[in-house]
Length: 177
Image (cartoon, rainbow, N blue to C red; front, side, top):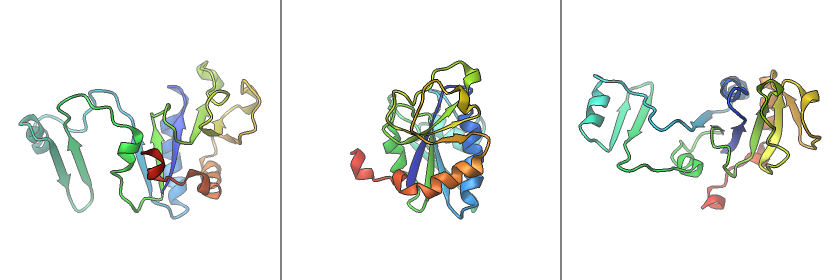
């Protein structure tokens, strides 16, 4: 599988880019998964549902499955800080690409999503894991770079670039143990 992170400050458009890259990569015949870092108390369940009731009763894991989808929820007894590599290990082995959003300090290669209008600094000058920059205003980049600079508003072109450069993003789990 190939893995690429999406790095950038809040409001830069990481989620929107992921949402656009998924169908663009699928158009190349690829299976795409997403790993998303969430805030501390997020929930995908809600009171009254059977799975919620099982969790409230103290189940460590609840798996809900149908002929269309499966969801695994795990309750940690103590706060547990999973690494992105822990999460990548649980994904289906047949996935072609994984988009990782929210692990900006990880040692994965990343697309930096940068917009001048956010007023936030760019990460690429000081982050060796930024492989490519996606921006809507390349002229506003704060520092010259030899990295590819692609149009944030052209997700199909960015997906094509990822496919063409896929070897760079091959994930080798043993390298991160």
